[in-house]
Length: 151
Image (cartoon, rainbow, N blue to C red):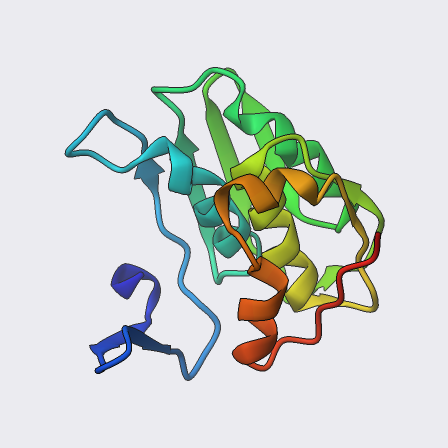
């Protein structure tokens, strides 16, 4: 996300995203197409949980999308939910903990949060992630992530 401070460059194989510092928090509001997609909201909250500043994330499309926030709280995130709004204040580092994926997007967001957390984070219910992101662990390893699938 460019607004968070990333430099995004097109390559022959896809995209390259580079950041030279912690991301900057970004406010988002989900809306039907062509607005910000609700499917990306868990990733935005995860990003904001380690960003500089405080962001307001408003969910206007999918009522149950904030269910995964309790799992991010287990990782030490600073998030307050009030109805369809979440106030996310970034912290320097998340901590490891066992967490449970409740759906595809939440699971992928928790895996990404685990990658930036200190220690080892176990994501139970990773089969949810498989439904939307086949070979997710393998793809993350190809990018240099230390991630292992445990059955």
